Each structure stands twice: as structure tokens, then as C-alpha cells.
View 1: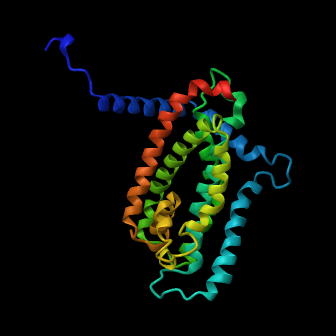
View 2: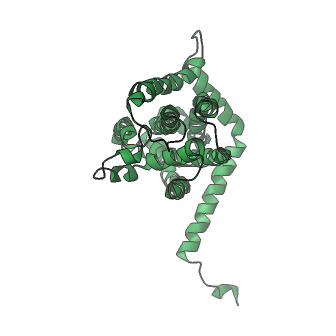
Length: 287
């Protein structure tokens, strides 16, 4: 067939090729500027507590103290008054610990996502600066900050809460998908907030109330049938269910949640890249 008469690629093929190119370009920028990302992560962790006696230890202590407080109130005080089924694996405190750690990590990411670019406007306005590194460094910093909390969660479940099952080996995979989801959401929120500044307030309100509509401190069976659908409309629920499966139940009890979680992670990451590429040329003008 003559080259001039080759059929034009379909719209779906063109979009797929564009997405693949966007992923490759984003990955190249991240890999090429890994040293820069590392420096920004260190600055993020250490900068806020420079001159303090305990230094950056404060930033790790905050989530641990919050989780410990929830464990005391819900797990010990309230949990002792509840009749938990004999089929309930482990104890109620470890159930709360697993769910709350996943929820707090996601909440912390959303709290920082809206300011990933607006909080670094001086860098965004520099033409040569690879701004793709900003959301990545933000996510890495949050995950590092919550590493001690995750260590507390795993240690408690391993030594006090009945041990861990073989499914706990899937934790690196789940963390990877979780990070992918966080990067995608951060890309979307960070590039849209400078244009629609009310987004920050909506995110703040959502993260403030979402815990009470997430099965992190109670079983879904405890929720009345009339309001139980709210749990399934809350994206946080699927994240919590996946973590509960691998670290608490030790088996896949929420198969649908795994599918939704994977689709959300990949979908939001790709959507974030698309939105970022379209809005990137205009960011410097509104910051």
C-alpha cells in the first residue's frame, strides 16, 4: 500500500499513544531529577522544624500521637463497651489502627495536594524548573512522614493483634498503587486550585468529615441499611478495605474494593497527567 494512502489512526489509538507518551515523559522527568526530588523531600521534612530541639522528629510524632489517641478513645474506652463478634479476627484496636493509618495518610496527601504548586510559585514561574517534581516530592515526603505510623500499625498487629497473614506480602503492591493514586490526585488538585481557589475549602471540609463515613473505626455491618450506601460512595472506603484485607483480615474479603482501588489509582494517575499537560502552560500566569 502506498504511504500516501495509509489509513489515519483512530481517535482511540491517538489518545492511547498520547497517554503513553505522557507517562514516559513524566517518568523521564522524575528519574532525571531524582536528586532534586530527594533534596526537596529533605527540605520539606526538616525545614518546618529547623532550630527545634527535637528537629524533624516532631513531624513524625504528630501522626503517631493522633493514631495513638484514636486507639485510646475508640479502641480501649469505647471498644471495651462493645460486643465484638467471636469471628472478629484480632482485636478491635488493631482494626482501628489499620483503618485509621490508611485514612490519615490519604487525608494528609489531600491536605497538601492543593498547595503543591501554589505554595512553590517562585519555582513554578521559572521556565527551566521541572515542576513535575513538586507533586512527586510532596507524596514521597508524606509517605516518609507516615512510615513510623505504618511501622507501629504492622508491629502492633504482628505482636499484639493476632499476627499477620500471607496476604501482608502484598503491602508493597498496595503502597505502590496508593502512591500512584496520590500522585494523580495531587496533579489534578494542584493545577486546578490556582484557578478555582474554593477547591481548597471543599477538600478541607471533605477530609474533616470523611472519616466518619469510612469503615475505619466501625464495621459496615454496624451501619443501618438506610445509610450504608454512603460508605460505597466514599472513595476512602475502598482504600481502607484493601488495607484491612492485607493487614487485618489476612484474606481478600472485599474483592470489589481491590478492583475499584486499582482502577482509581491508574485512572486518576492518567487523568492527572492529562490535566497537568493541558494546564501547565498557564500556571505561571495565575500564581
